[in-house]
Image (cartoon, rainbow, N blue to C red; front, side, top):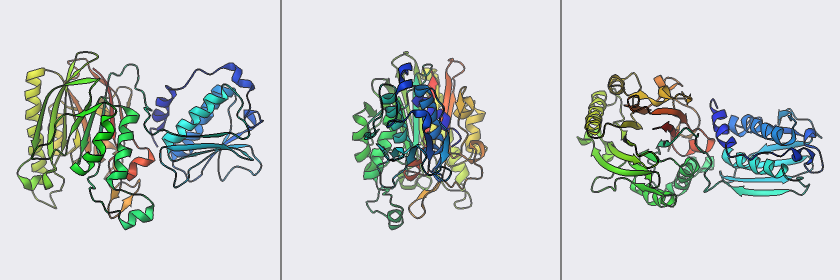
Amino acid sequence: MKKVLLFFSAFMLMGTTWMSAALKHKIAGTAPAKYTIVYEAKAEAEEGKDIAAFLQNRLKEVAGVTLPVQTSEQVKKGTKTISFIHSAKKDVFAYDVRAGKSGLIIDGGGCWAMQKACNVLTEELAKKDIPSNYRLSGSVQGEFLFPRRSDVNLRILDDNIWDYSSDVWLENWKQLGVDPRDDVRAPKFAQLVRAYMPDVLTIQEYNKHMHDRFYPLIQKYGYEISYESGADWNNTPIFYKKDAVELVEVNYNLYTPAQWSNHGSKSFQSAVFKHKATGKTFAILNTHLWWKGDAQQPGSTQARAAQVRLMLAEAEILKAKYDCVMFVTGDMNCYENNIPMRQFIDEGYVPCYKAATVYGNNDNGHHICSPKEGFSRTSRRPSPERAEGALDHCFIFNHQKHNAEVKIFDCIQAYFTIELTDHYPNLIDARL
C-alpha cells in the first residue's frame, strides 16, 4: 500500500526503549544474526513485505543486526527463519507466535495482529532469550493501537459503513468464507473506532439494525451519539467522545423531496463542539448526498447541488453564531470537479488531503463490496486518485483565520476493511 509507512510509524510510537544488553540474547538457541525474515510471496503488501520490513527494523534496534528479508518462494531449505503466515480462518485481530524446527512462525489474522506480535516478540527479546519451545498468543481486540502525533489535538474518523441490514448470509459470501451480516461487521467497526480513538466519529448508511449492535460496543469506550433519531431515522450520525469534547448544538436535516432521498437515507447532520483541552469551538457537518447519475435519473446533479446549498446555508448560520473552524465529511456521490463539490471549494472549503501539512493520502478510497460481487481491492472509479476518483470528501473551512491545521489525512486500507464496506475509512488528525 502507498501509505503503509505512515501506518507503521504510528505503531513505532508505542515501542519501548531497547537495551544494549539485548545483543547477547538468542532466538531458540541461535544468534539473531543467523535468521532470515520470510513473508508469503502472495501476501498483500502490509501483511507481507511491509510487515517484514517493520520486524527487520525492530530486530535491528534490539539485536544490532539487519536481517535479510526474502519471500516464501526465495528462501532456501534449511535456512533459519522468522516467517509470517496468515491462516485463513484465524480471527482478523488474533495472533500466534511459535517456535519450530526452522525458527519462529508468526501467524496473524491481519496486519494489526501481526504488528502487535512483532512488538511483543521484540520486547521480550530485548529482555531475555526466546526459548525453543516459545509460544505466544493474543489479540488486539479492544486495544488502542494508533496514538496521535504530539502536535495533534483533534482526531476525526469518517466512514460509510454499507447498509446491509439483512440477516441472510449470502451464498456467494459463504463461498468467500466471509459473513457480511451486521453481527459480524459491527464488532470490527467498533475495533476500528477503538484502534484510533477519534474525538469525533461521522458515519453514513447507518441503520437501526446496525445501531443496535454497534452503539453499545463503542459506548464502552466513552462515545455518545449526538442526535437520537426520532420519527425520521438519522443515517448520517455524528458520535463524540465525552471526555474529549462537549456537545454545544446539534441539528438534523432529512433531504426532501423523497425522490432525492431513497428510503430516507440522504440527509445531513451538523454538530458544534467545545474542545475540552483547549476550550476552542469547532463544527462538523456530515452528509450523504443523492446517489444516482443523471443518466439514471435526470436532475440528479442538480439535486446534489441543492442539498449542498442547504449544508452551506447551515454552515453560514453556524459561522455567524460561533465563528469557528468547520469540517465537512460525507459520501457526496460525485467528484471534486463536479458542480456540487465546486460549490464547497468556491466558497473556500479546502479538501483535507490538500490541506494536510504532514501527510495527505491521495487514494480514491473506493473498492468493490456488494451483495452480488463480494469484495476486492478493485476500484471502478475513473481515477485511482482522490481529485478525479473519490466520492467521499472531507473539507476544512475557516481554519486559517483561527490558526487551525490539518496535519494528517489518511485513508485506512488494512485488508480487513475491504470486507466491511466499499468505502475505506478516512482519518483527519488536526490541531485547533
